[in-house]
Length: 63
Image (cartoon, rainbow, N blue to C red; front, side, top):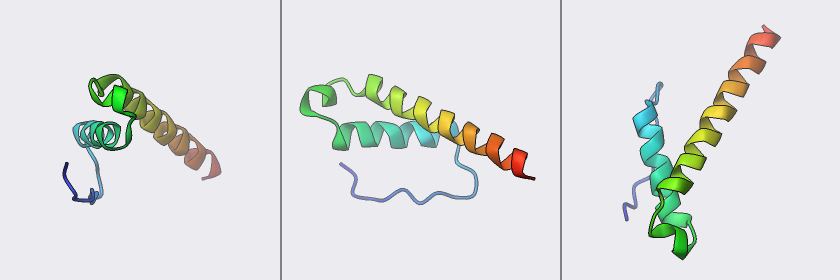
């Protein structure tokens, strides 16, 4: 496993988000989910995209 922490730049691509989700799923997931981590990584990715789009909507309403 990589011991490097992800250091984001100003814009993070979907590929970088997907790779980070896959790393989290393999590093911190239960043993039985580490064998096939793509399902868990996809759930993480969908959650991140949902939360980030919700934050943008909130920020627009306040302006």
